[in-house]
Structure formats: structure tokens, C-alpha cells
Length: 72
Image (cartoon, rainbow, N blue to C red):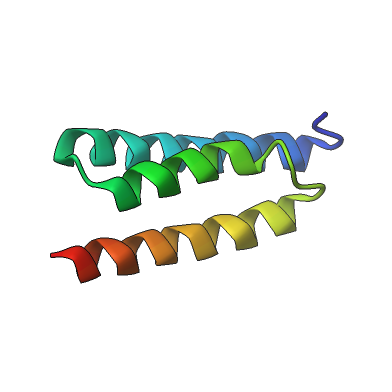
């Protein structure tokens, strides 16, 4: 599943950030961080390389931030 040690480390890092964003969304009752965090945690299962995971996670985090600011 995690072909290289780099992919494993990237999954742990991005999954941890995703968990933090997800918990923030739960506590604030905001759907944008809730969905963004869940997608960040799940992205590691569907991507092949660490670079792809970092790029997708950065896009998801930026989109989550933008949507959360837009809802305020």
C-alpha cells in the first residue's frame, strides 16, 4: 500500500494535519473544514507518490481555508 518510506511519512504528516482540520470542523460545526479534513486523511489511500499527496493536501488545505473564510 505505502510503497516507499517517503510515502509512509507523507501519509502520516498529511493525515495528522487532516485530522486536526477535521476536529476543528467538528468543534466549530463548520462543513468546509470537516469535509476538507476527511478528504486529506483519505487522500493517502488513493495516491501513488509522496509528491502527489503533498500537492493534493496543499490544494485541499487552501480550498478549505478559502471556503471557511468565505462562510464567515
